Image (cartoon, rainbow, N blue to C red; front, side, top):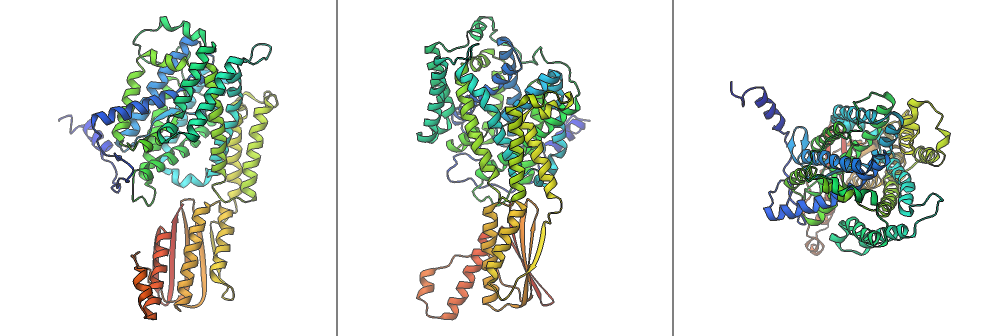
Length: 598
């Protein structure tokens, strides 16, 4: 039996026999689409840009190493190992298989996981962190195919609380790194100047710079801040002293501080919650890439999205085995890809391989490690401000009601309490410290629990008979606004649905197709918002959208033709607003179903 036809051959065939996905049409502003093979010169430049931006964002690996108490040499070794692990995760995202999506998605250390990871090491040691990262992501592997069904338990407001609290928890470290206070608590003027320059340049480039400068704003700001810090003497001489001892090449390996995995259930539970947030963030990143690379994008490709979450979980298991914290897709790298017009998955493969190769050169990690503390502080403060606003936008992306407002508000109060009054939870049982000891984790757990609690008793299907004595379209809009708020539906989707339903009711009443009352049924399942109009009468003709010559129509004096064309315009509007339209007519009872992707 040949190898090709043996077990390994069958495994290979299964692995790369990817489920069918609709072909993508490259957008006009994209030079190279997701499956395009770029010329070597273009690919080299694109990979170089992606790697440079990623190395700058790997500053979070340095911060993590410092927070868990590693010395300068250990920090360099830890950072090199992170580069290798996140390079492998990036490579996985670029390969198309049953377990990976085939997209240009670059992995970086996750600011979301940072606080919980450090808290687990502080409470139970590095072995507990290793086990938590690995087991939490094994759990994600099993639930990845079911993520669409779980979206209701992790709505945007829960993710928004997580993102907002990331910003809150980053602030203290950002201020301390920026001011570098001495033992008396006096701030260092050189450090403060370097931090202000770093933050100022990042903000200036982000606001007033061109497209390419905005994408590279973090690198430009950190570069300028580093120059100022070196000139003013605000540098870490301890790390500088380790430079001569570094070999030219070294194999990235788990740090000597990493112990054998230690099973701590509460630590695993805490980290699993963080990874669930990661999974939802990965869904959002995959959907963004899917939409940006397809000119005719209509709805989410959940197969690709699920494979992206799976690939990220596998990459994080690798990171856990190497003794590092887990990672997530960099939205900055997605922005860079779109700004440059190069979104080929082959660039993602090249970026992953380049990162893995760089991990064998300790000098690369050292350059990142040499980033002066005030520069790190400036980057952290910028990140904190960005996270706070991003969290607010996520929270307010859904229609709010009293339940949702309390969920968000109380969860943030809980998180702030832990951040500002940590001594209140210091005496709680050791097993609970991974959750209650982190303001971020405790806030997210609270938000998830309250969201699940308030879902009890909330109907997801509502049927109402419309009052013929009042304008039908107004009643439909009022119902959609009320129940959209109860369900936490996106406001733009509710608005589209309201316009389409109102237009459909106008068509039905103006053309005399309705006999008697109209029953409006609304159904929401986090993935779709469906509205169904049921009545005694004749089903309308909602034809495919067509182009109408308005000038010729207005010049024609035939009123019946004008009425027909106006009705056709209504059909066009309904077709364009709704993602799916279905009409049925059985035994004199007609129904019109309008479905909207959520």
